[in-house]
Image (cartoon, rainbow, N blue to C red; front, side, top):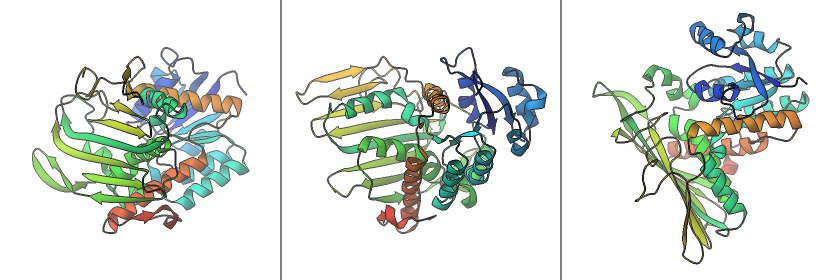
Amino acid sequence: MADKIRVGMIGLGRISTLHLPAYDPNQNGGINAELVAICDKDKKRTREVAQKYNIPESNCYTDYKDLLKQNTVDAVEILLPHHLHAGTTIATAKAGKSISLQKVPAMTLGEMDRMIKAAQENSVHFRVFENFRFHEPYMKAMEMIEAGLIGKTERVDYRMYAGYKALSGWKVPLKSNFWRITEKANYKSPTIFDDGYHKHSVISWMLQEPIDSVITWLGKFNIKVAGIPTPIQWDCPFNIIYTCKNKAHYATWSSSLHDFLPMHSDYYNCDEYMDVIGEKGAIFIPGCTGSWFKDCEAGPGKEGVHWCTADGKWHSDTSMNSDWAQSFINCSKDFIEGVRTGKQSQLSPEEARYILQIGLAAVKSSRENFREVKLKEITDGI
């Protein structure tokens, strides 16, 4: 294998702006990899990326199958809409390339199983890119949980606040989200299924106990254009309850979308707040995607990790990098080291499949009169 892992990227949409810095030698934090080939149907976007990352025109493609023929590519990042993942991933495995696949990995468990089989049969490194597990405050909280600082986790509460408009944040054209509100590509669930993959992942990670069932209550929010409501609906507000076999242990995720939120963000117009309650302590983590809590010295607390131990004493650590973008670099580093050393990167295909199963159950519950859906009911799609 080359001294540096040589990476190809398929898909250069919005989220690629957070994947690409991992391969910028001026800010990648020592990742031993380089971007050598790119693919996107938007030729203007391809030229922009090629120029910044010194990629020759001969390594810029509009068809991913041509990129996979490139023998100087060791690993591939796939950043495409979910319904395109299975075919692209299987082809990449057959080409003998290591794979980092953006969430959500598949539309059905059957698709996921076929991808896992292809990776195994072709002996390639395969993981699902889930950067929330590499958000440094979450990593710090998980270290404390695994060290037994708060005892066994009994409850996790995750709250997400989003604004169609905010004081600052990405200006995302509505048309760029159209695929997210289609049945074929995303079960018409841009929050519960798409973004939800992150939340299902982090909640199940910190709960540290298998999730047995989910219950989803879903309201309605009509997108407005120039202040006028449209027929386009977003899957908000909602509340999801995740239950374990021991019904005293559970988690919740609530999300709401508002016409306006008085918050700043460098990314999407949203932010999160998480509580983890253990048998002998609690952890509170304000902030993730946005910057709503960045300068909050009182109230919910400054970005970082705050915890209360069994003696009733409060502690805080706000020294880590709380910028959401850093989680992408940390996640990319985990992938590259996995390719280099053979150690399985997070998320393993098997755990990624389990999280997909949670997401499918959440969507199914929202469509079946908010009933409790057992994970074992999900054997393929919804």
